[in-house]
Length: 213
Image (tube, rainbow, N blue to C red; front, side, top):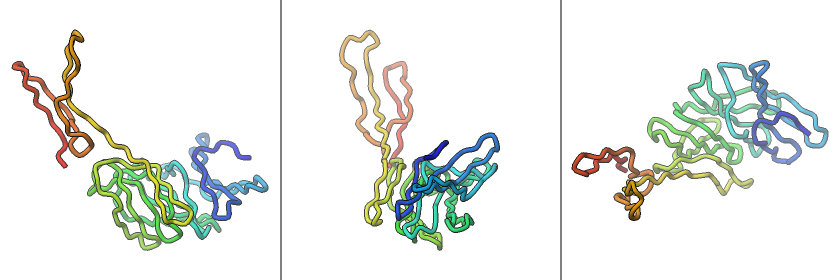
């Protein structure tokens, strides 16, 4: 029914339409497209050109059917959450936050979104936030050293799902010749206290650096 679909699709609340992103490199454009499932008719709701680029694994359609949320960047930096009006394609930036990294923005009903992103306060790893609409108020949902993405919200807005990435890094020693079993030296499992780097001294001592809390 559709060609050149460059993201996962988002269904309208009545399940009669879907929206997705289509990159048009020959024109240096990114299109936000709505597809009517009954007629296969496409409507290009919005077009962006560099330095503004739409970026997200998938759009998100509000529960009232009136808005589609996306993330976008300007000049490769300054990511922000924007809402497009389905009736006319007009765009509103709804997020004043200074994000370091921003990958997901999914509606909870029609008056808030769940965000997966990183701020100066949260550090490099993405955390989950609740962003109120249209006032732009931000509150934190998670507070740990893991990294979150792949956000989804149930149709009734009561259940949130996300992919959590946790890196376990430990320090081991093993004989070069393979005689004997490797031996684990640290047990700091998880992003909170994972080993970052190490250096071995001539006397066999090992100095290592790790992230504390």
